[in-house]
Image 1 (cartoon, helix red, strand yellow):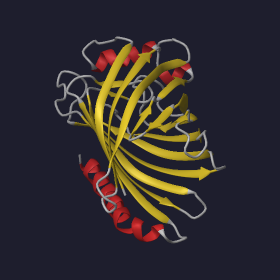
Image 2 (cartoon, rainbow, N blue to C red):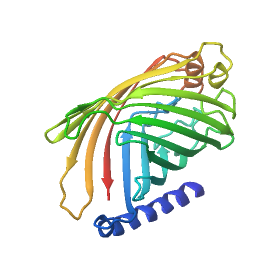
Image 3 (cartoon, rainbow, N blue to C red):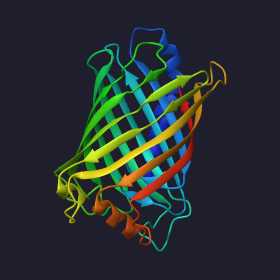
Amino acid sequence: MGSFVKGIALSFILVAGAAGSAHAQEASDGPVLSGAFDIWAGNSYVTPHGLVATTRGGSIQTTASATLTLPSGVSLTGGVWTDFNPDYDKIGNTTKTVNETDPFFAVTVPVTKKFALTAKYIAFIGNNLPKTAHNVALVASYADGAAGQAFTINPYAVFFYEVDGSSVIGVGKGGNTFDVWLGATPTLKLKGVTLAAPTWITVGPKSFFGPIDDGNLGMLTTGLKIIKPLNLGPKAGKWAISANVQYYHLANDNLRLVKSAINRGDNDRDQLQFGIALNVGF
C-alpha cells in the first residue's frame, strides 16, 4: 500500500506541475510540460496479455502521468497506473483492495511525421505476483491519414520483454522471455464524438505462456470505445468522458488455466469487459 501511495503522490505532483506551467510554455520554443489523469470503472480487469485478473467485485483503474515534450519532438513520459478491486474476492487469489501498482517511464521519438518509436520501462507490483516484474516494451506506431481526415486505422506493433521477476501470465517463464502484440485502433472522428475500435492479438514462445503446450497464439481482442469531449472553458484543461466494451478470446489454454485458478474455476475462453471513464488533461 505504501508504494502505491508514494507513486500516486509523485504522479499528482507531476500533473500539478504540468497544469501550472503548460500554459506558460505553450507560446515558447522551449520544452512543453503536460499531464493527464484517467479514472476507469468496469466489471473486470483483463491485462493486455490476456490474463483475466478479476471478474468479481469490479475494477477501478487510474493512470496519472506527466509528459515533457522537447523542441525536437522527443517526449519523456512518467507516471503510475493502478488497479483497485473494491469488493475483492476473499476466496479467490486476490487478497487486497489494491490489486496492482505499475510505475512506468517512456521515451517517444518521432521518426517521421506519422511514424514514431517508443521505449518504455514498466514494473508490475501486484498482490498476485510473488516478485515485482520488471519489463521493457518497444512500440512502433503509425498515425495514418491526413490532417482533418475523419477515419484512420493507426496500426502498431509492440515487443514486450520480461526482464526479471514473476511471470506476467502467472504460470509462464519468469524473466528473459517475451511476447508480441500486433494491433490497430481504427478511429472515426464525428462531430462532437469519437469512435475507436482497439484491436490486437498476442503471440510469443510457448515458455512465455506456461506449462501447457498450446502453441504460440495468446489471445485476440477487439472492442468499441465512444469518447465525448467536455468543454469546461479554456482554463479548465481538456476533459472527456468515454464508455467502452471489449471482447477477449483466450486462445491459449495457459490463460484459461490462470483465469480458472484466480476466478473460482471460471475457465471460459471468452471474456467481455465494459466500463466508463473520465479523462483530464492539462
